[in-house]
Image 1 (cartoon, rainbow, N blue to C red):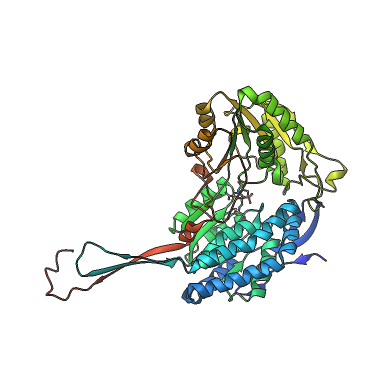
Image 2: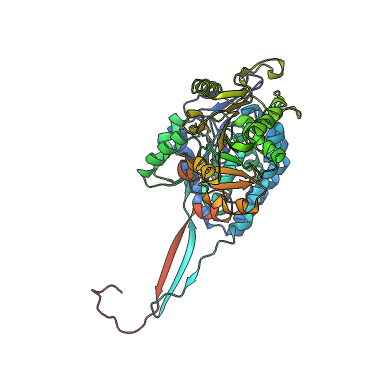
Length: 493
Ligand code: NAD
């Protein structure tokens, strides 16, 4: 019997108001494996109401007490890490090896922000007014809505709610309708840890059903969304109507720049993992390889050689390199872009079609790892986010041209540089319009480092010390300590 999840609101498991559930399909077995509640506006109201009521108590705790709760939650996440990883694989078809690493990392994120909770301090400002005492302080915003994408549900959730909770906010989480189960399994850990009721609430449902209820809700102070650019722009404009704080983590078209002096073996491995890991379904996918013209032939041969070794198969199997695409819609989108690239005149060096065969099990959603050469930066395959295992190879003549091509995109999430030249390694990152620039590595993240996008890749930052301040507002307190006679009340001092 498939598990039928319930909404987690105010510490209780509740059926959705309309009594409807959505089916979740395992992308590898192509079988419905669980049902998730289809929340609607009354459920959003209930969850936000619970979070609002809990806010007073949670924000009133000493920061070190909130930290203790986050540590307790982290303890439970450690205990259930393996189960959470398996749940995510069933939901989104990503490799167990990757989800297991993510789940092992999850508790560290909660512990990192638990550690920061009582380090947020205001200032005494020695201002230019005699006999005045000026202080600043940081206070939480209120109820934070975290909306997550399907590719790494619990990791993305942690980036949002760990700092939000540490800062004293309460949260409502809405995971993607394509991968909500792990968020409910996470809620079981919240329950087991005994986190006070209403502090963390989990809703599932369609963006279209609950979107307006979220963006217009008067009691939501902030929305932190990870998703596609169109969703981001829509949520941003709707949230503006009630002046909500917003953090947006959106898509990318990241360049991986390979200079002629690069260690080609390492660079090729980096470019391949940058695009084919997670079947290319990552916001930081290095989907444009910019290769120096002098080494382009040799480098493309390397890429094809490694790409051919990719083993498609069951994501639970440790020897699998590439699993299925998560959703039928995403699968079709990837195939459409392959057709577009071919029609635009790109030369297909590897793959270029759907993958079938025994290794794909019952899944109709495998795509062959694909490499296109002869791509220009004007082609749609180089400009639009595919979110699939499709690499476009472009060439450049010199550093200036590489930087110009890299920056000629509406996105700015990440970039990679492969070089053994120290000057390039040190000087070029600042010329790239991207939130993260990796040198001689790719797709390497840490909770201790800020992450976020330039341009259309997002607004605000997650991770690192400053992410706490995305969930805080600064207060100024000015105390007049003058005792002399009152002067002219009509003149502002
Ligand atoms: P999506 O935009 O379709 O959905 C994201 C979330 O928004 C889902 O929970 C969805 O239900 C919700 N949503 C949709 N419409 C809404 C509305 N009107 N109001 C409120 N919520 C709404 O994205 P996706 O397909 O789940 O994820 C893929 C996208 O996410 C890609 O573009 C990828 O680059 C991006 N992404 C970015 C990061 C990052 O950190 N920058 C990380 C992972 C994924």
